[in-house]
Length: 105
Image (cartoon, rainbow, N blue to C red):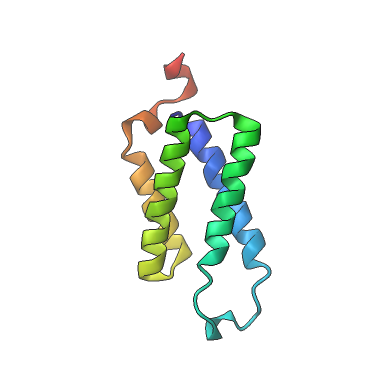
């Protein structure tokens, strides 16, 4: 999987998360942490990428695993920034992700 695809996933995931977070009430701290918005953002991002990028099964598996890493850290910390950082660190450790498009040709 190339880095460009993961970056496309990450950008779209961020946008979809922010769009959903914008619909939270101002006092959402009084509620349970809204984990469901991240699941919806992931599912929408995945569908967008399938329609527009025609990803391989390997690419879909890697973004699914990245999302699992994100959610694990989000559930532990309830800190989006920390969870995203840990997901990126995880992705950077994957050798196939570190290949750019030019190196795969």
